[in-house]
Length: 315
Image 1 (cartoon, rainbow, N blue to C red):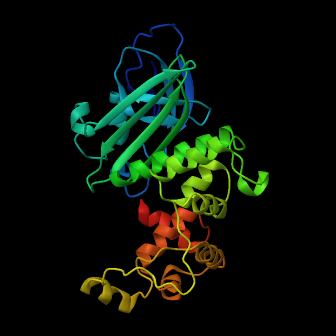
Image 2 (cartoon, one colour):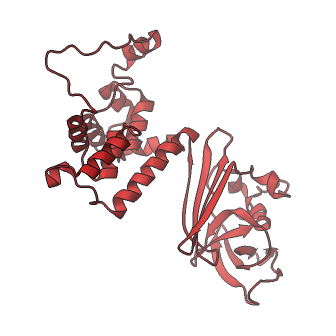
Image 3 (cartoon, rainbow, N blue to C red):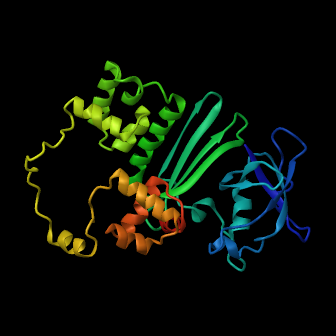
């Protein structure tokens, strides 16, 4: 595997394993890396933080570490454990001696090869109970062609999987299943497929993305099949369970707490966010907690100061 195995600091000193033998060539790759760790992390106290380093990379037998680095001169490569510990150790701290002492063991590792590419997923539990996910796409030489990293709650994995699957099907073939409002009706196969999916997925937004139509079209077809009932005017609504004491108390502060959002509310929320309304204002205006506002802003992909703050809160 091609990895970064040595670097030269601004004082001209080499670090790592500059004499390491290469598996496939006598000439190592050479590039420039500006080491800029995230502010506030232990790595920010590294003696090499902010330096422009000359790095050597090539195919070696040295063990790769957990971090991928983007070179200023182009290319993304994993670094060896030795390089990772040198860069990540704060100034004055004892160096990290072994991989198990540096990073917790992944709780999930999975990979497969398709079409000449290697798709890999690594999930590691963080101290605060969330998961750090790292998805990579490598070519036949092991070089990274694509990468997706982030931190999510474990309970969000299944919904994210459904969302990615729906996005993949929509982007790959957005017009495979006809929309009722485009063709005047659903084909029998498509109608049956919608009924089957509705038994598994009750979110109209997800179904609309999968079938390439609007939420309204999904609702109309499910109503036609008798899977969703339209309220009859004058007919009393079915009796609902009484609210718990905790919910009654919560709705004294937030009248719409735990009520479903409709399309009009989501559009107005996105508009108010784009206009610059803050989370506290949106909470009062929509009668919901600030946490509920943050969650909905992220779900609908809103833009504006409140949405930016919601993304920061989710990290």
